[in-house]
Image (cartoon, rainbow, N blue to C red; front, side):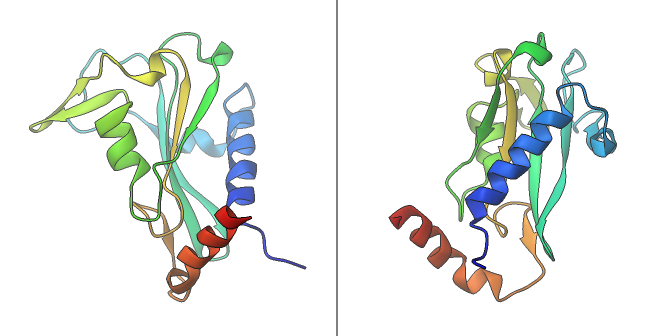
Length: 153
């Protein structure tokens, strides 16, 4: 049997996580962020972060931000920043379209944040990008070949 493509794992993960946030109570509540260092005090939306094991000894890091208003009726946007080599959290969430921007030692609200209109899921992908990891070091030797093969199909 052929190995799963990393993209199939991401799609399954996204569907599972979306189900968790649409009314089904799950252990994801253990991943809820009470506040980020330097975060403004007037934040009303919920945030989550954690790891999802996609294969034995391999886990992807996610940062989920609920829509500012009516998150149950807003769409889910999966944000991938073009790994390997580019962090969805470091760039997408905190430099491009996330709810906050760093300013010195504090965070300021981003007036153009996409979570004004959607629930945002930032996924560090593939393993080895950002906070995502693989304990199997040989994985890093062939991840680029896997991604190139997927795109070529």
